[in-house]
Image (tube, rainbow, N blue to C red; front, side, top):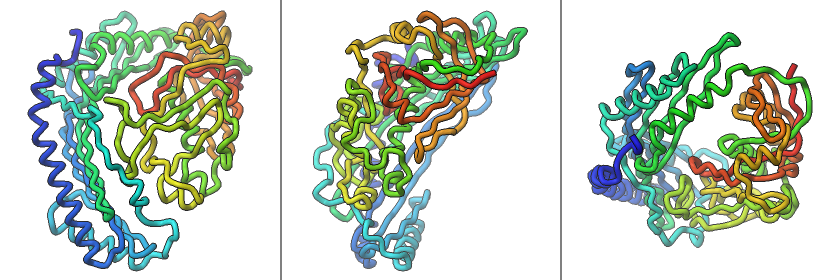
Length: 465
């Protein structure tokens, strides 16, 4: 089949959930505003509420049989009250009036006994979002259990049919949707709804040298934008079979190429080092680095919160602050930190609209010679070195920048993949890795809020035999 669900069927099924989602948003909004009024009546100088309803279907199959079927419908309600600069928070998963009242009472009781914190309080009222354009994030996939099972079995059967595939770790089909409201005593009420669906397959291959496992997946907001079942299964099988005959390497130094799905993790370490919590705790190797060159002069990283259909799109952050386009890295220079209102106050700065995280961070493709290479061209640019396809362990320090992780992948010679490798460790310091980026590919992975192509780093230590 060429598509998981037809566009016509998708639109018809999505319309079924349209009115229901709006009714749930209305209900959550009314509840949030009511609780804020009650919190103020109880003596709170400020209050904020985050409420959500999430639902979905998850199916896992293995070897043609159903392993699990899970229907979810989760509710969340969190309240924070401020008595001056004393803060109290409480939450519940039950939206019954008695539970809401108990949550309110508990939050107020906590706030009355906590120490005052000069940095606590709502984000500034002047920063609240006032415009809410439709970002095209709502596309329910009303797939039923029977069809989800059939789809999972279809994907797995295609993968298992490849010669050399000896077993399967299973296929999964997931459909999810959620609505949420954030409201505070500034009078702000922000409503959001979004969908996210995924398909995945993990396979096992074996030969006389041993067994290898690999996988592939797709994640979309709209089910009619999945890659085909065949394309996904073929990719999982090809990746698994390519790992057969893996060997170790002798210890050496070489360039390392991170494909997009791993390159975004590298950017994630940058985000961790420039986020407010690490900075005000003085636990970052990039402390006091705004305005300094930390990456090559040709490299730009920009936040674009309002991309239509983006995985990280949003009109406001977790505190109601309006999101906006902005630069994080410009010409290799760190333009700003990533801050919510609390961390901003701790640092004597202003919120960057990033309470709760970033919104569509785009690592712009480029290189020292201004070319925008595809994956094959990046292999040629590297010449001889390591293509990493799997990383293991948590050996990364935001405090020092030291980076050391177990890895597997492929050794590349003369711009061509030579053979698979495993049981190695790659190590360097993030400071040197960032300044040593030779190219960012045009092969951008759109399955995440961090949109990046492959990243080629000039030199890392590879520890093997």
